Length: 77
Image 1: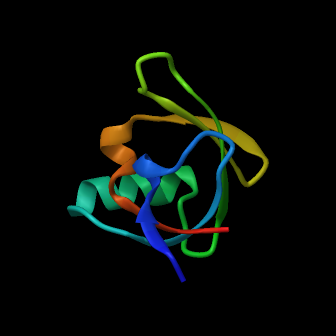
Image 2: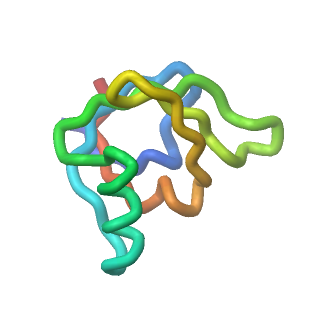
């Protein structure tokens, strides 16, 4: 199992959520957006300057800043 953080995943990369790190507020925010353990994520594209990332999870598109994505620990698929 290769563990990494979401902010380091390349465009067109697939992964699965392992855990969420950070303070209570960031954990709550990410969980409410659908970043639950086991959720599969696909990196659709990244903005020209690298921030934000456009992700696909649970059938919807979501933009997430790299600062927030660094709290999501993933396993590459």
